[in-house]
View (cartoon, protein in one colour):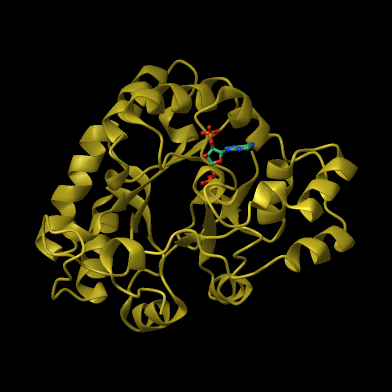
Length: 297
Ligand code: A2P
């Protein structure tokens, strides 16, 4: 599996299994299949996905059998209701207990916004700086080998970089051809912050209900046909080709295999131009609908 060097000196496999929306009953099997059968070496988790205990049970069964712990890169994320500094270590240890791990490879602040403990959507008087400093302590204690952020905008990062003793290794954001965020990706990469693409397939199920469907896009489909690959494989190859890390979610063994079979072809400059022209700033994940907070303006 191809890896990308992080600014923390650790390396991250450029493709991982996403676990958002994996139901608890299917999460363990999906992770076990990905690692033991399909060759994945990277799993992206979060406490808010409410499936970490099932994933942890599956992981425990794999260690020393299909894979060794040190061969797998595991990410988790601190939820917004645990941003008060005194809650951070406890939340991290809870995640470690659920995943049955001694350390995380990467621990992210899930959003750049703090909520009151237990009160989803109610903002708390906690600055990003306070939470980031607590995350730095976790890294120093070895609970997380690398630390980073998710859903951070440029200005959140510009500010964070003024005080960070440990620079974020990663910013994980929504990226796919319909929401390419080329300037933010380039800026992070110039700063030495690796960028992970979540919903790299345009959250197929979510988008199916309404709005444009990325995997049905005629341009993506034509490129797929030319390379004898699927539309999903084109989107994932494009994500890796532009230097980002992709974490497609799937519960289905066939699609789990399909999504890692993306390293045997190269897009042409013409393909890249055509895919880059598809951007329409089409965001699927926008918390204005959940929290009533215009997070992205
Ligand atoms: P499923 O779990 O049934 O495979 P994203 O990671 O962009 O959010 O996309 C995940 C969504 O896309 C899930 O609904 C997943 O459903 C579906 N999906 C995952 N891989 C593929 C694929 N190769 N082709 C089509 N749909 C896919």
